[in-house]
Image 1 (cartoon, one colour):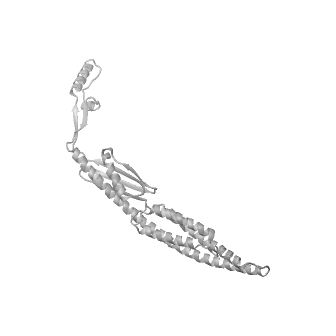
Image 2: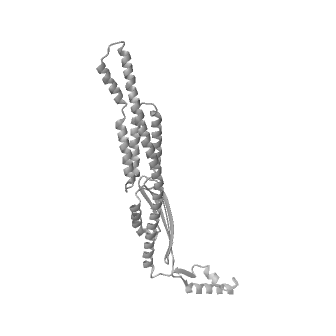
Image 3: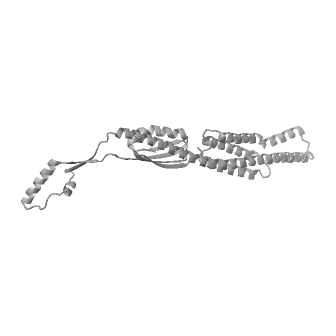
Length: 297
């Protein structure tokens, strides 16, 4: 099954403990490059998250972000610094007697002074257990998001596979046409050489055996049967890789390099009517396939 390396998934999960958000996206990369952003409180979860990704994905640059908003069941505690307030009240009384200030000390005055009131979050005895539940929920949500990402990559991979299969079939047709045109060209070359020898033999005596051997050698230099056979084998190998269960992107990329080398050799050896046009079309198809394979896992 062919998979694309590009994909995106996002989900939000809520329960009585927290609201969890997961965003994951992947793009092309030669290897598997994982970029994880987790809350600091979940640092211990990172190895398991990384393992979850590695089990489902083999190539691509993958960015995963996790956000967690924990629901608190306890309220804040407010503590009054009585000694400070008494000292402040006494100082204000002295100031009023001296006519320096007027009015009384209000609650609003105290709230504007950090030394007068201390606000703290109350300790939650259930916090360790809750943190464990939140971590388990995050791990489950990550697995769900990775599955969604993988499904998207499979869907895009199906489109890639259909496009590449069409081009593979076009390439197979072009190579068969090239083989036929080259055979006709080689036969025509032999005929031209034999006619030329016949014309020369009317003027001067020639060693017919030696001439015949040279004609055979000249024709063999334009024989592309080996290259065509190897190319057919590459096309068959392509089918086997695509139909297999393992990721095939890098192997397909290497196979395209081998096909391109065979086409270059065919271009150097083959001769005949229409050979050049067929070679150009084959190279164009190979280049389009190479661009598409860069997206395959």
